Every structure is written in C-alpha cells, then in structure tokens.
Length: 107
Length: 116
Image (cartoon, rainbow over all chains, first blue to last red; front, side, top):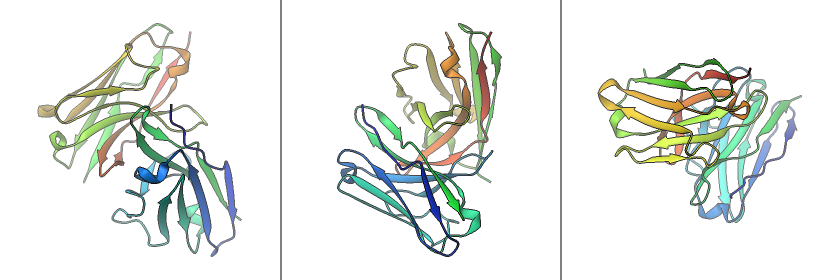
C-alpha cells in the first residue's frame, strides 16, 4: 500500500514561515493537496494540484511537490493558522491516501 | 451556497447496520465524483469510499464487502450503507465533493459509534 508521512508537529513564531513536509514514494509524479483542520471543524482545502490556492485561501499559503516530498509553506504565519494539516494524493494501489497529519502550533 | 449536510449517524452494536445520507446543494451534483472520508476521534483522516459520475464505485480494503456507496442524482443525495459494523468503524464520517484532484467541499460530519 502507499503511505504519506508527515512530521507530527511543527512550531512557528507569529510572522515567521512554517514548512510542513509530506513524504511518499515518487510523490512528485502525483498531484498533492493540503487540508487545514481546526479543532471541532471539518477539513478545508488550502492547496490543490501541488501549488494552486482555492478561492478565499490567503496568499500566505503555498505549495510545492518534487521528488518524494511535497511541502506546504505558510509565510507570515498568523495565530489563526494554528491547526492540523493533512496532505493527500492519489495512488493506483491505495487510491485516495491521506498523510499522517501535522499539528502546527503558533507560539 | 455550496453545501453538504450529512445525517444518519448514531450508536449501533457490533455486527449492526447503519445508513448515512449526504444532501448536496448549491452545485450540479450529478457532475461530480462524491466520497466518504472518516476520522476516528483524535486521529487522522481516512478515505472510505467514492462513487463516480457514471456510478462506478471504489472502496478502501477494510470496508469492501461491508459498505455500499450509492448516489441518487435526482435527489442530490449520496449514501453509505454500512453493514457488519465493527468497533474500528467508529468515527466521524464526512461527505466530500471531489474536484481538480482534491476534496474541495466537505460536510460537517456525522458521528458513528459502534459499541455494545
């Protein structure tokens, strides 16, 4: 089966840049997307097709995907960005796969 | 407003059955693949099942043969029939729309608890 691995937690100071990685075999050959989930809420799509932002998502969210790693970058992190973040990709064997999730803490 | 509203969750004994529903509004339901994603309390997201616009269906290995996904385009509705439920199926179940290689719209979720 196919697996996507993320760091359990990332800490960032307000106004600084947070980078969250998502690792999977040949992930760069697939489309990666990212979801933000705040406590008690449903997930929200923040990046799709590696680096595209849905309408309404702030420009401080950006994405990249190459080799075995996709990265979500939050520039000028704000307190409201504190949440769990999940990557996701499609694989022919496991179909729709989510990453293990990363808790972002804004200190 | 684009919206998905799930219903049908609840408490069920191991081995029991439950049928989840998802009512869609604000978009052309028949034009999108639709999916179910679940999340056990305190844990990560897990894809469960999906149905394409042509009615083709897909399942995660652990639910294949026990769960059945279906859609009724005339009623803008998605369903998940869950049989032979196990404790490991306990989770919040989300309905999600699939577009541009991602789940772009999510419902608020419905809780399924499998316990005696």
